Amino acid sequence: MTGWQWTALAAGIGLLLYLFFVLVLLVAGRRQDARALAGFVPDCVVLFARLARDGRVPRRHKLILSGLVAYLALPFDLVPDFIPVAGQLDDAILVALVLRTILRGSGRQLVQEHWPGPPNSLAFVSDSPGVANAGSV
Image 1 (cartoon, rainbow, N blue to C red):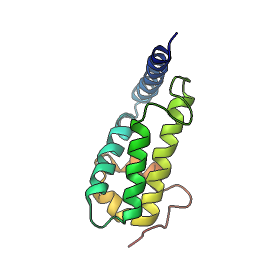
Image 2: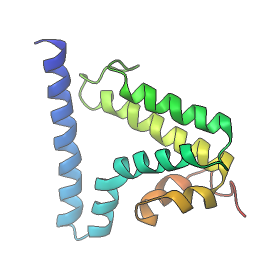
Image 3: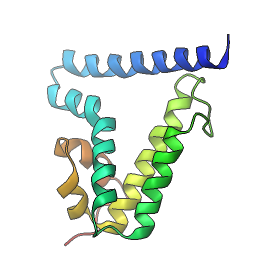
Image 4: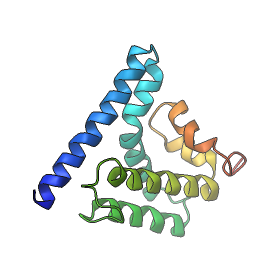
C-alpha cells in the first residue's frame, strides 16, 4: 500500500470509530452528549477562527492558534495519520492543549463568548485541572 492508501485507511478507521462512539451515545439515550461529541472538532475550528479575529486575544495566543492550524493542515505530523487511532490522537491532544492555553491566558469568559457549540462540550476541557479558576471575571 502507498502512503496515501494508508492515510485513507487510517482516516476511514478513525471516522468509523468516531461514528461508533456517537452511535453508542445515541443508543444509550444521551443525545446531548452525542451532539457534543459529534460537533466538538467543527466547533473548535469555528472557535479558533473567531478567536484569531478578536482584538482582545493576545498576540502570542494568536500565534499559537496559527501554528496549530498550520500543523493540522500540513500533510505530515509527529505521529503519521496513517497509523490508526494514534495518528489522529496527536492532533486531538494538540487541539485540547491549545484550547486549554487559550482558556488559561485569555479567560473563560472570552472563550465562552465565542464557543458555537453546547456548553457541556466546552466544559469537558475548561473544567479540567489547571483551568478551573483561570480567567475568572
